[in-house]
Amino acid sequence: MLDLCHLNSSQCFNNGTCTMDYLLNTTHCLCDPCHEGNFCETFTSRQHQYATPYHNLIIYITALCISTLNNSICLELFIRSKAIRRTNCGIYLIIYSILSILASIFLVADGYVTYDKIIFEGDPYSRNTFHCVVGVVSYNTANFLCIWFSASVQLERGIVLFSKKTSTITRKRSIIVSIIMLAMSIGCAIPIVFYDCAWNDVSHLKVLRVFFNAFHIAVPVLIYIVATVLSLIAFARRIRAYGMENRCYIVTFAKLVYSHLFIFIPPLAYAICYTLYNLVASRSDPITGYYHCGISLAEYIIKIILRSLTGVPFVVTWLIFVYPSRVYMTEFYLNTWCGQWSAWIVAHLRQCFRRNKALEHLSQ
Image (cartoon, rainbow, N blue to C red; front, side, top):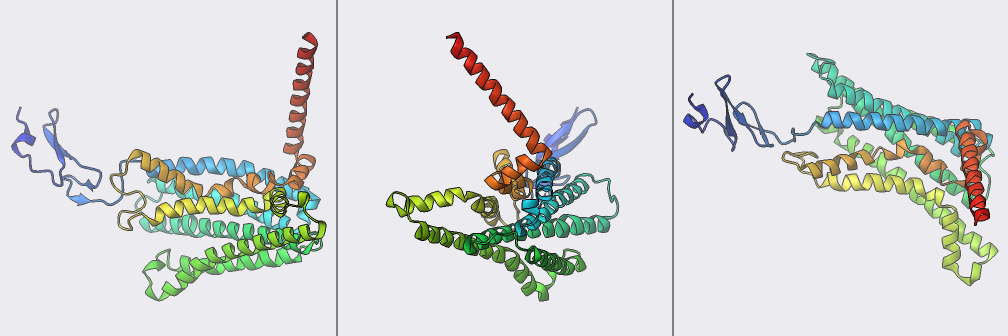
């Protein structure tokens, strides 16, 4: 049988390798990661050797399961605890938990449509519209609102600490701020939906795009900074009013920061998760994209993990808002079904451990 590849070795372009199918007596080209087509004639800047839509869908579904469990526990705590739901922080956290679940649902829906090509088959316009409305506008709106409400919680805690007043006086401020944020997010989403998420191609909207990006990123960061400064000033005031332990200002200040560490965990979580991804994404070639052609397996795994980090603060609400706070944890054990069962299990485990330890001591 003739080897057609040997007779015409130059039929594959761009260093493609010709292979012979002796059963069908046909040839085809094996292309490198940066080329595709019957003869490897087409350059592709994005990688296609890994099933990114499938991997993203698995991550999105896992995040949705964790987010639903995590934020459901938080909602039970924030709603059932009178000491929390009467505060401005409580209102912000209730809305934050709901938005976190919605963001995970939007992400799974968009990821499933991206993975399953049967949906909207033969109708690319409907597929693009669905991706625009659900995967871009709805998900990013929920994300930005979560960042805004997280910054509002931080600012509220800083104000309470700075003014030495309880936050149970009124919820009027939090309700007004929440309505303004929701109206603002709807207003920002309208032009994106109007241009079907293709407003990057509209030149006269360039200033508006820059303003939206700066507004939704710079303002929450500024709020975090102001709230942190207020908290640190409050610590300095407390030291000045009550004196220093062992006459060491730094040690006393560090103890105050440690006892109020729950205030600083949310902004630190956001800063770490978003900074790591943005540092890597900013160094990516705009032509080849984040997942460039020829990407190695190790680099691909690292990049997909870094990209997934941006959704972590919305998934682990309980870990960054409830667990670090002694007050919230006390309310968690007293007012939630999950907390009461957790306390019962821990108490019985400790009792069993002490009983076994006592038996071992008597046997000796």
